[in-house]
Image 1 (tube, rainbow, N blue to C red):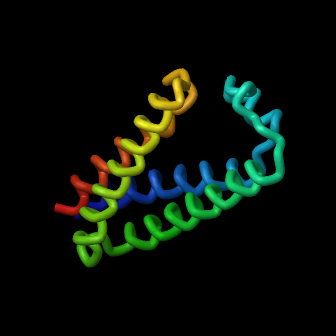
Image 2: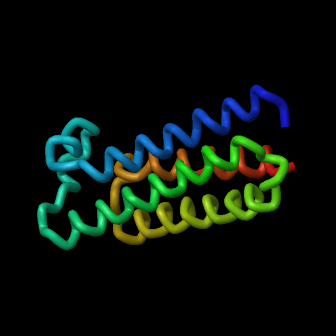
Length: 125
């Protein structure tokens, strides 16, 4: 893997980590800022689930940053992550569809997961 690909992987990992951090601290105002304010649920359980999701996203971003240090060593893991990110994207899409949500509410996360999956497949070669 060349230096440019490592940099891309590091940038993506930082974006993932920042996305997780946003989920850790998100509140009603954050949702409104992203034009999805109607999706905010202030019930403690939903806030808890959102925070836990944020922690897993941060975990994924930090792990990906570590992999970017020596991606050839972790090429098989990158391939697995590609399938896992595609799985997450499909769950997002199907859950949103069957819950009759507007695609705009989950489009960014769906597209981001597909993009990361493609990068993982590409860099896993």
